[in-house]
Length: 236
Image (cartoon, rainbow, N blue to C red):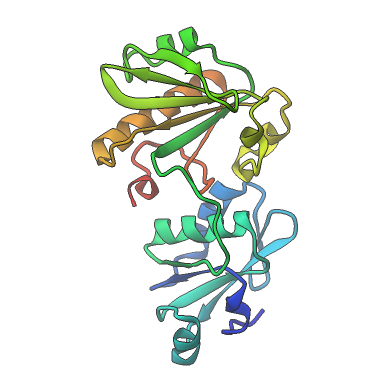
């Protein structure tokens, strides 16, 4: 699939200043989809999608498609997952995400989302996270059935989604792997109104504590798996 200005009118792509080692790129894509595999001319992921590259961005293509020069990987189709993948790779490798189609709006206050195979009641959440976010208290239910846990002692807040919340199952991350099929899936969205690296790290630490404690999976806003609170993509 050759890179062209015509294709780039509808297909997302990521442009990197340098070509990373293939093993590093594949590892990053597998954080997005653990079933991703190397194929001739790229990496396959999802339901038959392909990330094709690297291909040099020529001055002609750069000018017509409004891209920086560098090395591009283009996705074989457009859609939310393709946009999240290219955006997440751009964050991880210091590149540029070309997103010609409208992107699903994210809540920028969210840092890490934890999906769990069972409900974690507010009292259990407060107990498990007392060291990271002391004094968590549940608020009233939102219109969609979700509710927030907040603390007067911490800027971290947690939105709790049950399987009855429609948005929980909409476009579930591929990074969940087999957990994606769980009928009783719950979601816990850790975030803060403050865009401060120290608070981002605190939210990530608390989210990973929950994920490790109850067999959940933690992902970032781009639906990439998060394994450590110092993941650089959380701070870009």
